Structure formats: structure tokens, C-alpha cells
Length: 205
Image (cartoon, rainbow, N blue to C red; front, side, top):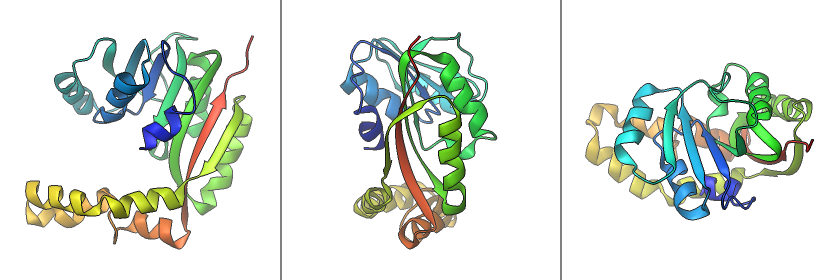
């Protein structure tokens, strides 16, 4: 749903798309299958995740590469759109990442972004976007939507965790999954953290 929310703002049919921070690849697969880009590359810092994706997905013009979001292994102006969902909070330098986004996007290309920040870091994120050179077309606070989705998906998520993992690890996995009772879910519902999405565009030549 997060990928549908951010990527659905732009017509991706026939475009070259980069999914930065593709993780286990489900978002890249969704974009390729349902939104029709000519090609999509999923990039992730984890070699294990990239290997898993290569074994799991077999669609024409969908490929996965290992790389660093702050030093993207692509030529300038390689992509029409760059999608980044729930990944950037792990980066060492958001400003460096945004500079790389601008570099690899073609003129008029779109940056489609969703992630969370603690409240005290939200103004910094907005400033980083403002200073990046990208033009913000849409900015939304989607925290209530994310919290509601966590609640709606909780039964399925807990069933999978408790059915597949040793009981000793259940609490850790539920925390990682952001289930109700986890710290991040508590931050969303208490207002200590916000989940935001951006649709931004690189300037034309």
C-alpha cells in the first residue's frame, strides 16, 4: 500500500524506475507488475536481500543490484523516477542521498518517497528536501493511515511470526514489524513520530 500510495502519483508506464532500498523486493515487483515501467532496478545495501530477490522474482526488465543509496552505482540521468519507501531513516546522510537522487534522475524525473521520522527530526527532513534542488509537488502526513494499516494487518502478521519463528524471538520480531505494542507503533499513536510522503521533481534543463 505504501508503494501504491507513493508510486501511484506519477504515470510510470514505459519509464525507467529505480527502487532505492528495495529490501526483500515486494515493492519492486508490485511496481513492475502493476504500474508498467519499461524497466525497474531494485537496489539494496544487503547482499543477502539482493540474492534472495534474484532467486524469488522472475519478471522481464526487473533486476536487483547490491549498492549504497548514498553512492548509487549508476550513471547520471539514468532513471525517470526513483522510489524510496521506508528506507532512508537508516541512512548516514539524507542530504548525500538526495544529492544522488538528483544526479541519477533525468530532467523532469520524479522522486517518490515515504518514511517516518521522530518529531524532532521532521523539520530537518523538510529542510533537506528544500535544499536538495528538488521541487516538492505533494507532501502528506500519512501517520493515521499507517497506524490503521498496522492494526488491520496485525492478526495476519502475528500468525506468521508465531508460526514461523521460535517463541524466544517472537517479541523481537513483533517489535521489528511495528505491531501494536511496539515502540514505533506507540510513537505513531502518541504523536512522537510522523510518517510522511513526498512527491518531488527534478527541474527540466
